[in-house]
Length: 239
Image 1: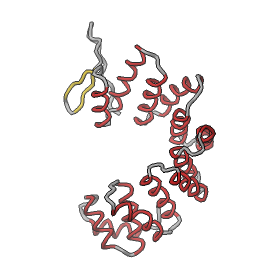
Image 2 (image 1 turned 60 degrees about the horizontal axis):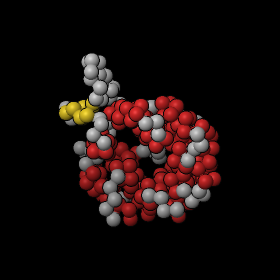
Image 3 (image 1 turned 180 degrees about the vertical axis):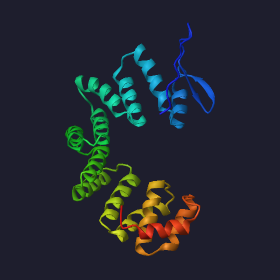
Image 4 (image 1 turned 135 degrees about the horizontal axis):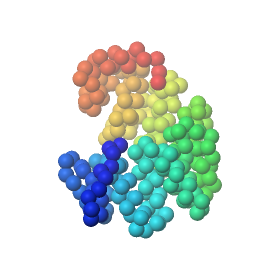
């Protein structure tokens, strides 16, 4: 993350950040926040929420600050602020953000325990079920991960994400035809996502459909030489 600009001039109390060479005051409300989000300027977002927290120590602002720390990759700072929310009685979204941080730090058992806490509040929480599957996959429990992803899909959580996760498990298990069957309908109805397209291209190569794999790589502009990338994918054993 870009280091935050420090204002040292006497009387300079209005925090600011720089996006694409332009300075923006950070007290312009939601418009500034949306702009910073769009550009992925988490340093600016963190500074904004810190200033808001000084004025009003609200749980929602602290959660947003913890979320931006997580998105910036500063998992320990995110956990620090979440501890204060947990001490006051956690909500489902607090448990899930805690779990995401712990998972990112490879503390998978602890991460699963917080997913379980979220599911205790709502057993049909699709985000929690999907996250549970991701953590189980990281731990090598592919069977458990598939079961969790299926439950997440039944709970109508972001179908494209869940389908991609299921296909990833199939690819690891070398079930390439099944991976294609999962991903291709999503791709054909116009959904575009680099990870999904990479997975689909890889699975297509492994099923022998090199022509279509090359077409997807070309459309996504993922390689200067699609033929070479297809050849490289063909040589890869698995993920």
